[in-house]
Image (cartoon, rainbow, N blue to C red; front, side, top):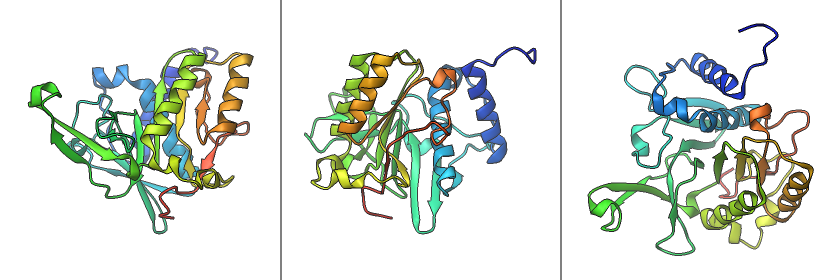
Length: 251
């Protein structure tokens, strides 16, 4: 690659994956499924960097027998068979995991799987079989929404209004703390946690940026756009992300 040639967002993600593997002494195992999920993995690494900047120390958990970090990029896997990050700062410890299904507090039959979920350390990942899921032949795994600190979604596409407002549904059904009367008080300038975030690959037009600003002022959430063009540093010079104190009061 010529020195003058600008790296694509995908190459930047690959570089970040390799740096992550080097920093945490794990192997970067290039599998076809993982290559197709570079955007999600890039968002995961960006989130880990956010927490490290906030003073947390990361530890790789459950790496493969060959030392590789096993990314989970589909909702069909058992989360216990894949790697995740344990983030600690003093007595505060939580996990960053991929593709963990959430059982919502709004109704017994409401389940969904965000791309990334932040949950307290040692949260039990439950399992059950349902006759309406794969004919009852496969187990599905989940955590309860009351155990979720933040659920994040990654969309490698241009932003558009329907995509932006659809994330409100994930916020409402995936976080029991959202219904608390003191939910607004969770937003603090130096909070340890990134509020639930929609990561979007494409850049936004002015009208979209105005809409994003309005949504962030109305709800405890983030919409980060322009990831393809290099918006990976969530606490960079021009970052304006919403941060939370621990909504589960475990700080």
